[in-house]
Image (cartoon, rainbow, N blue to C red; front, top):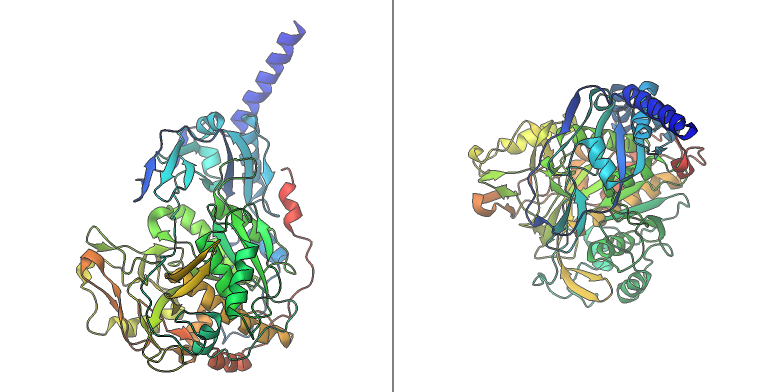
Length: 582
């Protein structure tokens, strides 16, 4: 009798919790069914037994955040460089308490314990058995296999939530988002000729020569830079040391062993991940580097959304500890994230920029990305709140700095967003390009009122990577992003040596200082089956942006910028908050 009474009370409490979470209300389709991208297929194997679900709880203060970002990022603003603290940003964007309560009650109603992944609880995570996740989201999970061997568990048929819960969140992951698996292209035929370093590669010495870095190295103790890695792209200490030994004689590469952050930093060194860490440390000597790696599954094998894990880690890392620049060689078609999810990613990018953190993304390796006779934009580089890096190839005078040293490379992606309007900071430069002749026909469907990308470019071919074994001739904008990030890490160092702020969100600065970049006026991107791609032109173009960085000129431009805030020391908001139970 007592056992029956206990069961009855528990059932009543569970039902009450479910009703308070909106379980009894009408369900709302939050994200619809998606088609599988090229090279992905449904596997015969069952999906993972357990998921780590992330609920992106709706945030507040979004206009205030955007306005603050632009104030601290626009060189002509008196507030330039006066970045917000992480605590400021977390407080500004904190979700409504009611929304947090709705989500946590919904999870508890299904017997799931919620945890806050960020200090302000805008990401709430929970470990959920696959059957419970399917019931919660009214969906079906499957295992997906990529031609590269990558495996993920996703719900491509879409998912729904009770109306009250749906009103409290932007999206849930992992669900319909199927990530792009980006790998640099190995063993391309070498362009250019051997030079004084003895190699025909874009080695650290050649890149420093090409971008007028000279003998510049880091001196600011607080300066840090980082690369990100996703989907089993591991780090290899031995590979990095071999690369340094091979190419860094007489110069300083990096600053000791990189700090490892995330759930996937060991194991087999990946070509992509080692390219990134070898390149950024090769360009920027004596600056502390970090490797942030996220596998898409936790150590106990729960499937998760690795990009969201990175964003949560970024929000949970204090101002004194967070790197001031990140390079990410991750990209996919812009539409691979739904519009609501992409809007949320934009907010996360703005949060980073407002804190003085620069985010650089490889623009992509598909040229103009022709699909079904239309140009298709790629993200996250198409976001107005990150810096997209396109690609170049060696010219006749490579690796010497100056005219003729570079030309646009066909693989460099660029174009116009279908999601985001063109931001004011680039309108004048882009409109000049659109008035020129020789552009692809409008019938290819590109949106000339959309955010234009890339913003800048750098070398994207003839790189040497050591990833367990030597890989010569690697190419892709995965090479360009860490190259450019290394140059900007050195520029951050100049400011921080003088007690000034980091550069933060770079784009307004870039378009205000186009003459500090090497303008690329030859070559074009590939148009694939659509015909011609985007041609390089004087000024900004949709294959190389405003050009490649000239460190010497950019260093002089630093002198005219307002000082902003000195780097902060210490912050009570840190990764320890991740274990907080809501």
